[in-house]
Length: 171
Length: 387
Image (cartoon, rainbow over all chains, first blue to last red; front, side, top):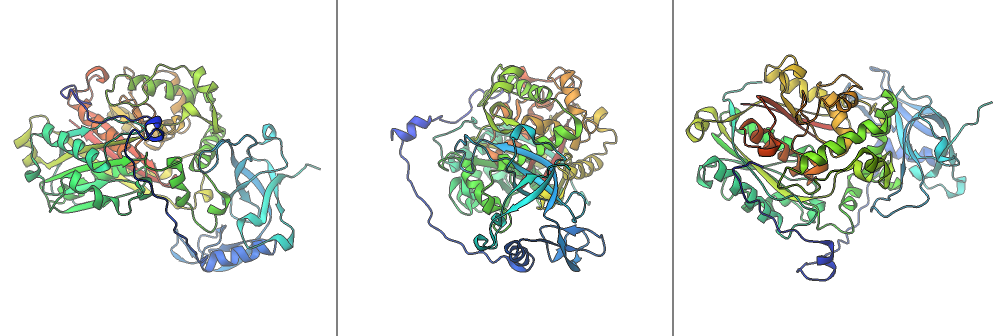
């Protein structure tokens, strides 16, 4: 604000004003539906998830192995060269513990989420996924984890074919 | 970059920032625009071009909402451009205005930013469900706060930062906002209050995070020769920078916002700033979360990597400190109407550099930097102001 300006416009409303219909609102709920093609790179990624495997693409110029796989390298700006199977193990790069869902509804029993750096991909190349079978107080950055897969008959070619990632017990 | 005309800010305006406002987005845009024009001593006739910044259409549920907002931003029958990089929009819009004037194409440009988050129910976060890649991420049902919590944890872990030092940012900014007449959440709180507040997505707690907000802000830009006809106290927009990182945010190390550093280096170079910590009098980095102010101070090269928390703990970033940070009260205190949040920061730079900031006034300020951030933690937009 500038001290030269004495009045700032705006009429504040409370949540109750909406509920009590004290103000006029026009309501609308969209009913749109989409069917996305997964494209060249991610279709193979999803097919391999259904097979219980993770796959990436290598760029032979910068030598990076990229997961999720893409058909071009955004840095070298050229086609990537090879499909590379990577492991379904890795380490936690960072994690968080959500007590709210995508609509900000409260969650009482949280499922931790993490960026997991994938073994066999280049350093720092990770994916977002859930953690499971772990005490949330024990989770640490750097912890080694492995994928726990759905049973083959239940897989449908989705990132959810991995149920969660669990700690690898030492020894 | 070829700069034909030096660009001045000669007027600013904003509405109240509140969780819910009765006014439509169009009305809010009008009030902010009108206030900015009036403070510049200008009428709509003298506006040669308009740049609108407004973020996801899904908040308002009005597709191509810039067109809907055009009347309110004085754009009727004028060259009109929308710029949009999520939360980064509020500083990207004046950068867009700068292109118009610095290029010599227009003498004047009205820059307007609007956001109305309250129409989206049950919560504006629901609109962000559509931000994710539909193939590799959306099936996990993420919430944006999850990934900012991932970034915060990475930053804290790499530098071993105690949560107490991060909470100090929320305490400072909410207190600063008590002196801002438009502020939504000015308050006197303690570090303990922050640490005891509800856990949203650990490590993010309720008082670490800025609120959803309705509001609008506006700036009037003019070329040097035209600016001098309107005012003896122009504020110069002397440096601009912007950069976007890959959308594969899980493929980069979140502990440092390299894209902000790229934007900052470009803006400083343009403004001929060689030693930012020495030459910047105060900063308005983007603070939708308390840790983001620290993260961005490092991205803006105003603190060494991992040292912004220490600066905060030592009081350097207080309004009367050596480098005041978010003297406005920031998004944590004034509010976070996504696209309009960053422009509020530019308004603050203008008012501070004109010595009009009243109780919020920082002393002896001559150079300021404002910065915004957004998308999938991937965009940095930076503007350097001078008096």
